[in-house]
Image (cartoon, rainbow, N blue to C red; front, side, top):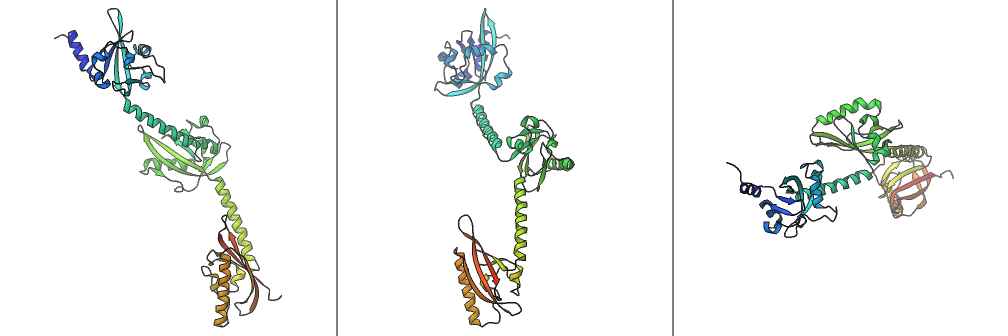
Length: 383
């Protein structure tokens, strides 16, 4: 059995892919059923029309469709066409994105073009969303406060954002493709290798900051940097990629060191002060009390209300109640933001009566709220 022209025409009409035959002048000479179904035009409405009736010139790209198809006709599957699409306008004026394959053939001394189309509108929309999401992600990663570094299974750097350059001193060009060892102290290379291998082999998908504790990096200048890091692993095209979000904690460490120094100085002054001193919370409960104040008491007062402490021994119940209420009222006044100062009679552990110059001062936060109360007493018995 041989194919006749009619057989070939029937075959082309029944192809599942939309297709058309175009003259060198850009006129549609033939279109199959799949194309009429895609476009909504009938064969008579398309055949004899210019190709721009179906594939108009793009306003965005200014593409001359006839020249464009002629350009690629001798190479029906060039790599460039995988990334280019044309816009097809349907009978209902719907605009579809189509990929194109084109080949040239000669008949009776004239050039003809066989054009195969594929509707990629859905894929194009998905790709556009992915590109947008990728762009947003890249912008966020680029300006984020944390360094973001990705490495492949061989621990070579494949992603390096601006903050990574700021922390480690290497530019993106200097870092990409190089081993992660360039930002690790020599003493930690072996342990880091083991950590990465264990993480790759394990079932965990990520480890958050704080789970590893503090780690150490190395700046381009050679100095060590205290760091925290979160790490995650992702499989992309069968390849495992590790990504780390790295935070420089140098300033925090310095602040913590300064705070410890400040606390040590406070503790030295507070504990060795000759005056009795106590720190109360905003409800009047004792938070801290120094040695001089403890010498006036027989019990550990932390957590008790200041006015309930055993300051007044060997006194009548009436006098004790009066003194306690007076101190409660004074503390309440300070809780409301005022400072009070008075003279009180106290008894020491030995029972010795003492005359104390006593003051209560509020400590306010930036909003003017009382957060602590400083109680201070100075023995003026001898005076």
